[in-house]
Length: 91
Image 1 (tube, rainbow, N blue to C red):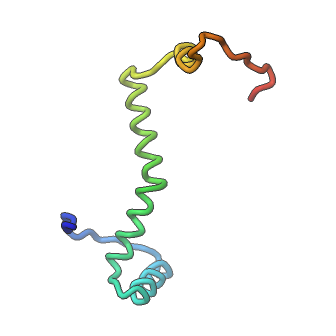
Image 2 (cartoon, rainbow, N blue to C red):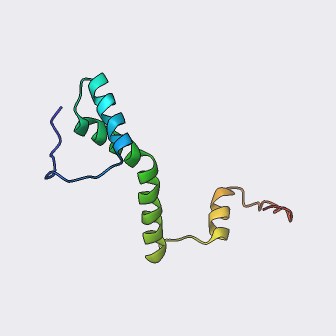
Protein backbone atom coordinates (compact mmCIF):
# COMPACT_ATOMS: atom_id res chain seq x y z
CA UNK A 1 0.00 0.00 0.00
CA UNK A 2 1.34 3.43 -0.95
CA UNK A 3 2.04 5.96 1.77
CA UNK A 4 -0.37 8.91 1.85
CA UNK A 5 0.83 12.31 0.68
CA UNK A 6 1.39 14.43 3.77
CA UNK A 7 0.70 18.12 4.24
CA UNK A 8 3.15 20.65 5.57
CA UNK A 9 3.43 20.43 9.36
CA UNK A 10 0.69 22.20 11.32
CA UNK A 11 0.76 23.59 14.85
CA UNK A 12 -1.92 22.42 17.25
CA UNK A 13 -2.56 23.47 20.82
CA UNK A 14 -4.51 20.99 22.92
CA UNK A 15 -5.22 20.65 26.64
CA UNK A 16 -2.32 19.13 28.57
CA UNK A 17 -4.43 16.25 29.87
CA UNK A 18 -5.31 15.27 26.28
CA UNK A 19 -1.66 15.42 25.31
CA UNK A 20 -0.79 13.18 28.23
CA UNK A 21 -3.37 10.64 27.04
CA UNK A 22 -2.07 10.85 23.47
CA UNK A 23 1.49 10.29 24.66
CA UNK A 24 0.43 7.34 26.84
CA UNK A 25 -1.45 5.75 23.92
CA UNK A 26 1.48 6.36 21.59
CA UNK A 27 3.90 4.75 24.02
CA UNK A 28 1.63 1.76 24.70
CA UNK A 29 1.07 1.14 20.99
CA UNK A 30 4.71 1.80 20.02
CA UNK A 31 3.65 4.69 17.77
CA UNK A 32 4.32 8.42 17.74
CA UNK A 33 1.97 11.25 18.74
CA UNK A 34 1.27 12.18 15.13
CA UNK A 35 0.07 8.66 14.37
CA UNK A 36 -2.35 8.73 17.31
CA UNK A 37 -3.67 12.19 16.40
CA UNK A 38 -4.11 11.32 12.69
CA UNK A 39 -5.94 8.12 13.63
CA UNK A 40 -8.26 10.06 15.95
CA UNK A 41 -8.95 12.59 13.19
CA UNK A 42 -9.68 9.78 10.71
CA UNK A 43 -12.32 8.36 13.07
CA UNK A 44 -13.85 11.81 13.56
CA UNK A 45 -14.00 12.38 9.80
CA UNK A 46 -15.61 8.96 9.26
CA UNK A 47 -18.33 9.70 11.82
CA UNK A 48 -19.30 13.19 12.91
CA UNK A 49 -17.28 14.97 10.25
CA UNK A 50 -18.95 12.88 7.56
CA UNK A 51 -22.36 13.90 8.90
CA UNK A 52 -21.39 17.57 8.53
CA UNK A 53 -20.13 17.01 4.98
CA UNK A 54 -23.34 15.18 3.99
CA UNK A 55 -25.50 17.99 5.40
CA UNK A 56 -23.45 20.54 3.46
CA UNK A 57 -23.87 18.50 0.25
CA UNK A 58 -27.63 18.22 0.83
CA UNK A 59 -27.90 21.98 1.39
CA UNK A 60 -26.02 22.57 -1.87
CA UNK A 61 -28.45 20.24 -3.66
CA UNK A 62 -31.43 22.17 -2.28
CA UNK A 63 -29.88 25.50 -3.28
CA UNK A 64 -29.25 24.12 -6.78
CA UNK A 65 -32.88 23.05 -7.04
CA UNK A 66 -32.14 19.32 -6.97
CA UNK A 67 -35.26 18.49 -4.98
CA UNK A 68 -38.36 16.34 -5.41
CA UNK A 69 -41.92 17.16 -4.47
CA UNK A 70 -43.11 15.00 -1.54
CA UNK A 71 -46.17 13.79 -3.44
CA UNK A 72 -43.96 12.70 -6.35
CA UNK A 73 -41.64 10.88 -3.97
CA UNK A 74 -44.50 9.05 -2.26
CA UNK A 75 -45.98 8.13 -5.65
CA UNK A 76 -42.63 6.69 -6.67
CA UNK A 77 -42.66 4.46 -3.59
CA UNK A 78 -46.24 3.36 -4.23
CA UNK A 79 -45.72 1.26 -7.33
CA UNK A 80 -49.36 0.17 -7.32
CA UNK A 81 -50.59 3.78 -7.32
CA UNK A 82 -52.36 3.52 -3.97
CA UNK A 83 -51.84 6.33 -1.51
CA UNK A 84 -51.09 5.71 2.12
CA UNK A 85 -53.37 7.11 4.81
CA UNK A 86 -51.79 9.80 6.96
CA UNK A 87 -52.56 9.69 10.67
CA UNK A 88 -53.77 12.97 12.13
CA UNK A 89 -51.89 12.33 15.39
CA UNK A 90 -48.57 11.70 13.65
CA UNK A 91 -45.76 13.91 14.83
